Length: 283
Length: 289
Ligand SMILES: Nc1ncnc2c1ncn2[C@@H]1O[C@H](COP(=O)(O)OP(=O)(O)OP(=O)(O)O)[C@@H](O)[C@H]1O
Ligand SMILES: [Mg+2]
Image (cartoon, rainbow over all chains, first blue to last red; front, side, top):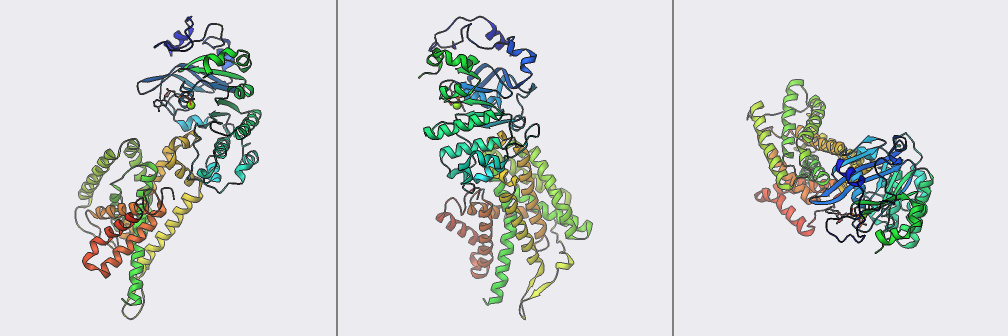
């Protein structure tokens, strides 16, 4: 925690963006929108509506250091796009936030309450729903069972997302209720996991690569649904390779490079700066 | 074999198979859902039989023994899961086998210390002590029919629990992806504890039900453990309905083996297992079915 704050607070020279230098991770230049501790966004007033936040998060897989002091915040009702090339640590960050991988140091708070090291189910119970990469449906349960097993009222007792509403949102699922989860097409499986996440009446929905491997038409359908979910007031964290689509429906954009935040600013600013894409996201 | 003795043997086979199912279903659930090989599962059967002996002596009736013993077995099962088995989920099978084999030795020693090594009998409840005459010479004991009836009711209850309740959906989901179940806000630890306690209670109940028709004595868990593993393997590891099929198959193989080929009686069960596995190496049904 301490050393990560020092590291981000210290003025740093701009490194080559290709990140080829061993031991030197690319860092944002001083005029970019990285939020630092002490910024306006970290005043108690601003973080009061922070739904899920992390400070100085470090995560290792064995001896490989994946997250290098990540600061992360998503506010109530906010849509955040989390971007970065393959292997930069997006999924690891999400799994760290959810308590699905052990974190080495830092803090994870949900509504200001420290949750780092808490059980995943306890974190999820705080109103956080997770749609993992690769979808994570239960193929040995029917479509209906996949949905019903997850049903519960939200943190404030809200029950807007009923089975009926999920059916209305995903008419394709309504036609396949008795099918096994494993018998669905990729797009249907994705709808099922999103629908299942909504059955928990979350305040925050985290989508990791929700459109990966889907036909463009199906992907567009998913984007439409995500937009609808957003409008219903649920905060979203969206990880996706399609940065144009993500930045067009999010309020804020965050870019990870080798486990470090190199950009954290409004999606408007992100769109206005095409260099960010070529530098950090292009292939 | 005339029709009546055939009927008697069939009823015996069904009763034996169903009792075996009671033990094996817990074993297959714990293996299929938690990934634990529990060699001590047979000890729960033995513990049930001794519990029936002790509680029947104390309360005067096997019915009371069961009413008190089943919740007790569930509590003991939950405690064992919380203290010992919870540490096994992420361990490999060798460590599981070592710990659970150690438990067998501990349970046998405890039994020896507490009740000694004598063989005991348990009286069946008076109202079930009669038998139904079939013809001039043959009759069938009501108590064995009652065992079958209890087992059928429990099998239906288990089916309902696993297939029709939300807890059952969570149990099945947990057998596929533990992390995902947790990420939906469901405490899988509690679910595992419930499943384990349920498995212990069913094995103990099987021991209690069997007590009046088989003597209660040392090492009675060993034979049941081996047969239960045969049932689990035949049925398909992790499949409860496979276990039901497997248990009935073993019930028939054992019962009719003793009648038709008495000289091969001991081998019959294993011949059936070999035949099933040659036909279906994965067992009769798949996990989760
Ligand atoms: N279970 C694991 N064990 C060891 N290393 C891992 C593991 N999972 C991921 N990694 C490594 O950690 C780094 C970050 O991976 P992560 O999956 O978080 O990246 P990502 O940004 O989500 O990538 P993608 O866009 O491909 O999904 C990668 O270098 C990856 O190889
Ligand atoms: Mg990823």
